[in-house]
Amino acid sequence: MAQALLNGMVSGMLIALAAIALSLTYGVLNFPNFAIGAMITTGAYLAYFLNAQLGLALAVAAPLAAIGLALISVVVAHAVYRPLRTDDPIALLLASAGVTFVLENAVRFIYGAEVRGFDQPVARPLVWQGLRLNHEQLVDAAVAVAAMIAVAVILKLTRLGRAMRAISDSPALAQVRGIDKGRTIDWTWALAGALAALSGVLIGLDGTVEPLIGTNYLITVFAAAILGGIGNPLGAMAGGLVIGIVEEFSALVLPTTYRQGASFVVLVLVLFVRPQGLAGVARFRR
Amino acid sequence: MMAYLVSILTFVALAALLALALNIQWGQAGMVNFGIGGFYGVGAYTAAILSVRGTDPLTATIAAIVVTAAASAFVSLASIRLRDDYLAITTLAFAEAMRLVMLNEEWLTGGSDGIRDIPRPFIQFVGGENYEPAFLAVCFALVGGVYILLERLVRAPFGRALRALREDDVVAATLGKEVLKLRIKAFAIGGAVIGLAGALHAFYFTYIDPGQFAGFVTVYAFMAVIAGGKGSNSGLLFGACTVMVLVEGTRFLKDFLPFLEPSQAAPLRLILIGVGLILMLIFRPGGIMPEYRLSVREWTPPTGKKLT
Image (cartoon, rainbow over all chains, first blue to last red; front, side):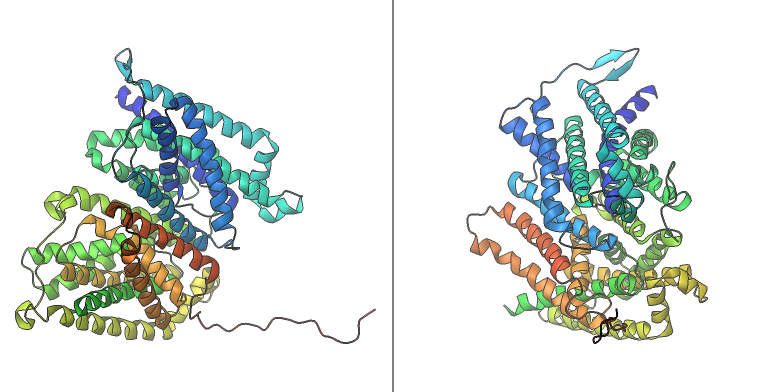
């Protein structure tokens, strides 16, 4: 029981990173970015390339992958989302489906469908009062917590964070106050890309690296972001933890192949009962 | 060659059905269905499971239509109090959930092996050699029937009410339209058409597995509707042809690029399809035949004497 809680919290943190990324782009750009799954996958493969093929230590490869995906995200934003010149969420989310096809299949094109793993020494799990914690889980949790603190600091204390929150509240008002919308959007994509990449690396570290890892987490990540109140990155952290724990406990009653099914149930329940999320303000219309 | 043409035209007919369904859900009622692949799978699996167990094809097809329509009506309840893009998330999640069921409920769906040897309906009357052209004719007849039916619906007060709530549901509600009821109906009608297409898919291929109902089905349907012009049924028939020609055309990529591994050709095709979707959204968001709409002429400032 306590073991399941612990495992759930660790996998919840991985989910939370991607959910924060999703919430950031939703808040600033006001559309659900379906490409978040493909971004997770791309991030994991960037790290795989640096780690297993170039022989860098994962501790170096992971931040480099985050920077790499941040750049890719900004390029995609300029190549795809900006030329659309629309704020119609549906057009943007269709475009993000196109981006998903391109990114995911680029990965498949280069690496095929085989299951891979990072080049990382195997270590003995830590045992404390009957609770087992893998080395990987410890790394996962530490990196995730550090990244979450960084995001919270950026959002609450920096100029960029204030600009993001201002645009998220009211784009027009933000621009009247002299906030450079284009630059803020670029930084939002960069931050989202970095977080998605980290999430991908950690998910790959926890399990394996394969082209579908992002897609397999897509519903989970959406459930977490919506549970936290979509567009609210700090809520997404909490949402991620809750979803992680729910999925872990669902494995006690459901076959493990239906882990995502638990997320689906949570997603539907939240949408029906409390669509603004647990902590969110109502930002939907009838 | 003839056989190949027939098979491509059959794909066009199936894509046209999906696009027609999407056009009433999204084009008319403004409800984004991002889980078409999943609903399509529900229809195909319903028909396949029933006919493998000996149900006659007509009943199996009707069952597929009813089950898919019911599933659509249920999922559309998510739009009770939510913005459009939440429905997109819910439908996508539904498709994912269906994928899990197809993959894991082996007693029912055969898991990743799928269902094979689905009996071809009425083959005893038609005979094996002319079966595919005959099937194509039936598909075309069904596309025609659905087209006429939906065109009539769209021009009826029902269609006007759908467009009204697409443009502004609050205004539609104040005019006495029952928004939720209309939405559920529109989604269920679309779902029925998807279910029909799914049943045809199962009967045509005689073999189905979960991989056939992935996200690309949804993307094809959206591309067909966007290419044709959202809201226009005649445009999307064009759109379905264009998309299927593009999709099938990219199959020949490997003949032009012989250095590709066979396992690389498929991802490359999907990359091109993704790029195609994005380019279409950027350069032709209104499609070939944009929906006819009345608009107030842009106000031009009167020329002449300048006011001082």
